[in-house]
Length: 78
Image (tube, rainbow, N blue to C red; front, side):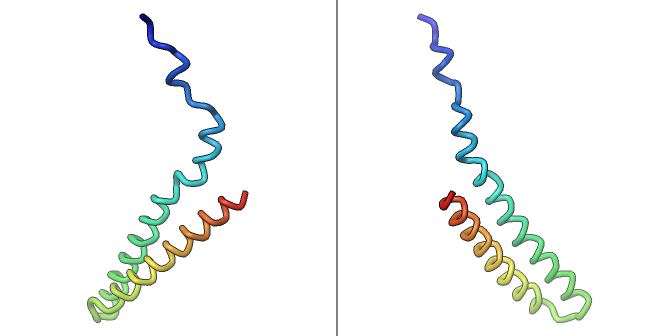
């Protein structure tokens, strides 16, 4: 008995449906990491460790989640 070759084919419509969601996790992570590094860099300049790192990390999480939720809601309306 031969395996059905059509069993493993993915419908192109499947990729059209998931395409908007593929980069969201990476975008979320990059936003948070970039803001943390910005906070660390500014802390080293102003010599007030870890104040700006904490502030920018919190802002990065907020901004990333806001953008994530906005993107998901926008893609659901289509």
